[in-house]
Length: 160
Image 1: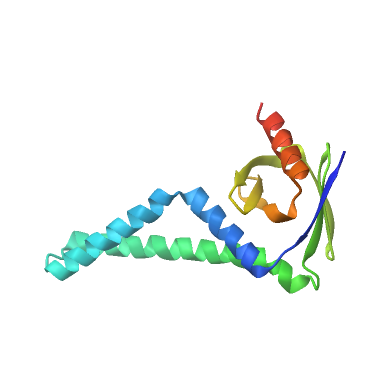
Image 2: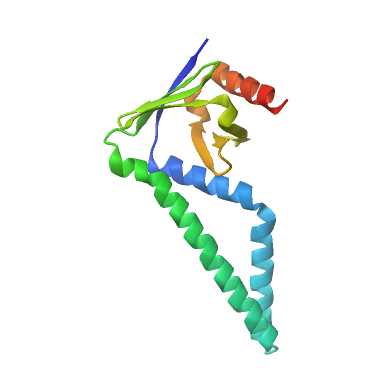
C-alpha cells in the first residue's frame, strides 16, 4: 500500500537539512578540532610565542576553512536552486513497494529503493540518502506515522 506525503519546502527547511547533513557527515569532532586549533593559534599570538610552524598551521587552517566553505555554499546553492525554478515549492512524494516517486511543478521522477543508502534521522527531519552525497529531505511533521514506519521497514530490509 503506497504512502503519500505532500511537502511544502521553504528555504529555512532546506538550509536546516544542508546544515544537518554537513555536520553529520563531517562529524562534530571536526568542529571541536577546528575550535581547539583556532584557540591554540590565538593563544600563540597573544602570548607572543608565534613561530613559523604557527604560521604554517594558520595557513593550513585557513585553506581548509575556505575549501569547506566553498563546498558548503555550493551544496546550499544547489539545494536552493529548486526555489529559483519552481513557482510552487510543493512536492508530492509517494513511497511504494517499488520505490519513491516525486512530483512537483518541475516534473516527476521515480527512484527504486536500491538507490537509497541510509536514513539520517533528526528530531524534526529525516534525510533519505542516495548516491552517497544526495538526499531527499523529509520533514517529520509532514509524514504520517505509518509512512515513517514504512520507510524504516524498507530501509531495514535493504540493510540485510
